[in-house]
Amino acid sequence: MAHFAHWLSVEKTTLNRVGEQTVFRFLSVHLAICNCPYPVHRTVHESRAALRHLLNVLRKSGAIVNRPEDRDPLYLDLSRFDGYMDRVSELSPSTRRQRVSIVRKFLLTEHEKGVGTFKFQVQQIS
Ligand SMILES: [Zn+2]
Image 1 (cartoon, rainbow, N blue to C red):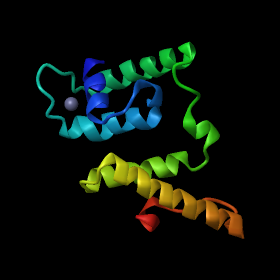
Image 2 (image 1 turned 135 degrees about the vertical axis):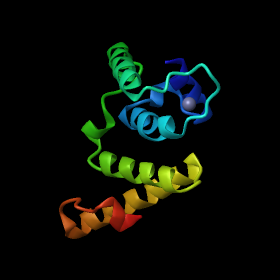
Image 3 (image 1 turned 180 degrees about the vertical axis):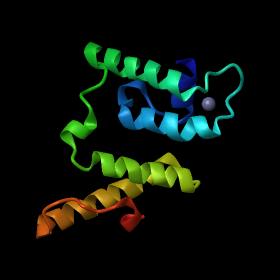
């Protein structure tokens, strides 16, 4: 948990913004390239269980809201797009947020024009 807290501070993410996307990026991206100073836990399985518990505690205490994907239909696709940019580029978090925002506007515009469903693949928009 201390490792996750350290990573949050490096990412300049506050605890009230933590959610599935944050945990996913920590487990799938950060742990694979982690070079944080010893001692840190780098076991994905143990970290996943601990972070799942953390999310539950934070939700029950009201520190974080319900899962974003429950109220945002684009959340999962845009999270994958953000994860893709994080893995293959050196883009800063703020640059990635800007690009995700641009893609979100594009998808919403296409939806309003009558596309109807969001069936874009991340590879098509990256
Ligand atoms: Zn680390």
